[in-house]
Length: 81
Image 1: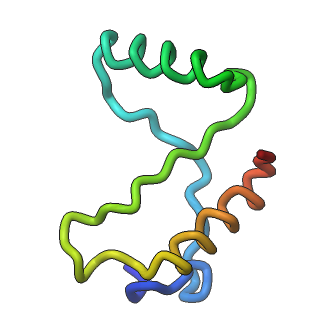
Image 2: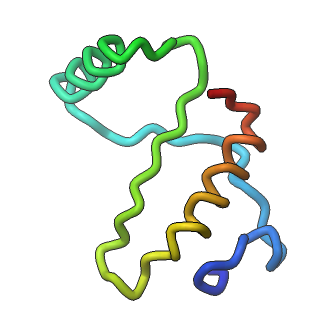
Image 3: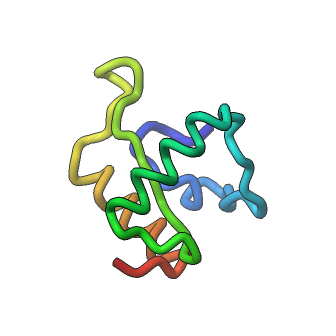
């Protein structure tokens, strides 16, 4: 794993070539879809969801670094707001 707060590409790692779905219940999928639809989210477009929590305060990146990482991921995935 890369050092905390470092972009993994800086240490010779590439982004994963495939995405993996998280196992969820049908009830959770329906609740998520309902919420996203109520917010006007277009299901045909990619969606980046990020959780800033890390389980321990010492593992949390500074807010500016977290924002930079999100901006880079969105740009890399050609996501538009």
